[in-house]
Image (cartoon, rainbow, N blue to C red; front, side, top):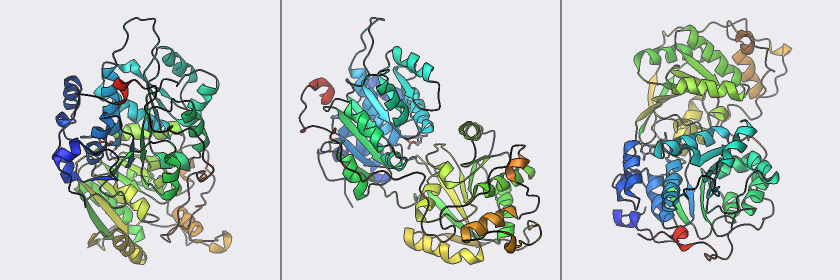
Length: 500
Ligand code: AMP
């Protein structure tokens, strides 16, 4: 365990192996301690950012000195501001030419995996820079190309992009990146999972070699480490309290409950406790079913899963974030990366597939210094799986027996397994989910055409293995467009290394 003092947080030694920063250490620092302009300090305070989170305390000081950063941090840690703050400080240092006709070059590029994440980054940018709306633009799939091209013509200095659309624009020469001075690669692990490595290579190849690069990944296994080595030069490694353990600000409860009493238990918790709830279900059908039943019980509920379109998901998230729905029911994949602060309660309606998913789910609450509660429903048959989570993550649930008199959900006739093809427990669970009373196809009940029956790809319920969201494309040969040689050739000294 490192013993970083305030002085060593603010004055990092470059190239130190890794800066592990805990919440307690970060608590000793304020944004006003950083080498930032007075204007930026007061805008951060006005936006409610007073104390940095650990990843911010770890990354901002060396990034302000022009160092490359390699940080292990996932959504919810405050990673966005940890790259935006040094970026904004740098941009403010370079005064904008006043002539209207002069087109600004793009100086900063943020590459990330999804449009939702891009929109969140832009939102954070506008919180800190409310008067310079046109200085940052999105270049992402799923949005109008023409608008993005028009916005680029206005000369923004910051581009927040997903690799596919950006590569397309580059090929069509709709964008130039040859003056980019700062590159952020956000959620590298997810971009690689989604097969973006070739696009990233081509994009980074069109950037000046002599730039600053900040790289973020939730995990940093040997494979990812090998790939990011191409893009960062002697980075300062930033690690925060482990991503493989739930935050200690989250109270972990486990309810022993029968499958057919879970809904009544959830209804009871919604009646007894305050705040927003995110409820995790194992299957798409299951999440539709739970959402529909909660609605019937009078709880305003939204649902997101892989069978819902992008616009349905965005609308659901918006209603939840705006407080129009108190409950969001989600599957693991759909919930990855969503950034909604102040979720009071996470409910694992179904056990997660393993400790990774458990940590991701729990990470939706207890963010940015807030407290949270996470409740896991455990049926008698799943007790060993839950105990395994405790052992693997070195956590301790507060165990409670659910009230035996809770209302039971009624079921249709028993399943006739002979009529269905059941190859594994995943198939069985999918059938189980559809056998609850009142269930036709969930999509039909929403007035939409029926979705194809769900066939989980993984080994549902065994606690092992989890399907990937896309092809893992890393591990191939190395492209050659990373930093060259480590010198600052060609980079104006004022940009690369700040002197105060
Ligand atoms: P991120 O991990 O960057 O997605 O941030 C998660 C949430 O924490 C966002 O809603 C941020 O606005 C919020 N946040 C980030 N940094 C701070 C901070 N230093 N103090 C309070 N809230 C923060």
